[in-house]
Length: 614
Ligand code: F6R
Picture 1 (cartoon, helix red, strand yellow):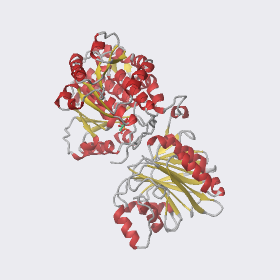
Picture 2 (tube, helix red, strand yellow):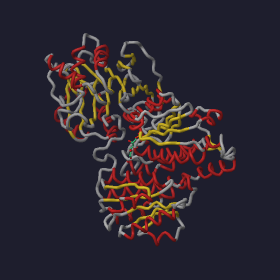
Picture 3 (spheres, protein in one colour):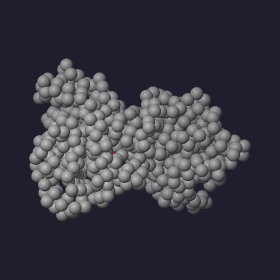
Picture 4 (tube, protein in one colour):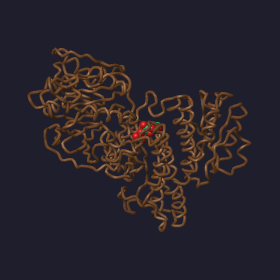
């Protein structure tokens, strides 16, 4: 999705903005641009281009006046097209009619057509097809000497979502930023302020960050930041210390972020579980849930709202809550939740699962559930993200930054966190100390188990090579393996562009089996779990239709070879933990298929890391 980086301070803005935009590349974009205030002419110079940040750098070198490159005030943007195709004109920043105001915008202005036609009648000309350009024109129209007030007046007229940064020739050392529904983080350094839509563009400069809330307007100089509401009432926002360091957002010798993040899973799971597994009491401690045993015992229903990979993790979690804590649990696609008028009873708790903590549909589901009186807990990775802040309680994954667009370590940490939540809830109910202890000990061996799968990467790569030319795939499983089948198919399709479907193994013969043939490989998920034999039966049905079958099975399962063409082996583990090693095998398989096919693994076409629009 779109990204914003703005700088005001005492250094050359260009390098800081460009390096920040590079850090935001992972979010997905199709064009980019930079506006700098030329200190000599006091004009705003803008360079924009479709394509990658490298193309923007080339255009900057060719087109930006030399003195502007020393500018100490500027804004930059990566655009993921929504209104208007990804070309130079539609790229941000957008200039106002008189060239005195430049803006960058993330989000969607829903009433832009009405605003645009009113402004056009008043003589404003528009050059782009975007919704965002109206913001630049409105700021110009509302300006009476105070940039912050002009932005506030503009925002009172717009409907929709925004994260914006605005600069003007009239204020050579000031940047104004604001948010509603689209994140803005503000990095505070000595004599400099960096505004960005994502802290990964900030952490190399400072760890001290303020997160704007919806409705906040920031006025920043190099030495000072002030936050007010749209109604001009000062508000105070706490400074958060970000403990990510720059190494965590570099590739550390791996060819892709996705591969790095797959390999990081043993550490990520250790971090997610560290200090939370209490062997002696056979339980887990998750202080972020902020719940005493009395409250835990009272929960009578859990609603899980999430999207994509997080939703599949939620489906695994549903099984945990029902199996360990006997709490009825339901997973809802977050976009569905907000429009379905769901039933929330007194002791219904919602879990909002989101790696980024910014997914628009999940956030909307959180707000709707809160409106209906549900207690909502966030299961987020990004510290200080909107969902984490608005839920106020929940459990952080501590997986470290996930940069690759395809989610990997977030899934395994989400599953680990929900297993811990279910154990804690189960212990207030029917789960005994002994069973709790056994589960906690099994969880302690998760990092080792994850490593054992990663150690087989070369074997998985060889199998990937054999099947990389296929254009259709099925993943099948049942029980804990059903959501893992869907996640395996999602991983493969998003990075290799192979059409892949995840199905319940039993469902295959209710229709999809018609598609099988020798060109359609089927991945059967058959670790040692309940129902494995039935899935093996379904794999036989596939083989009978000449479909090549790859099994993901438990090490030591000698019989499996007779039911498939190739086997990927995972270490033996407790049934409830099998989603973790199996999904790691799927991630490595998808990664190597995509690599063999020459795909853009970290930034697959059309995808964005954090989906902040509906
Ligand atoms: C797939 C993927 C997406 C996300 C989904 C939700 O690899 O990354 O399906 O899982 O967009 O994102 P979060 O978890 O940030 O809410």
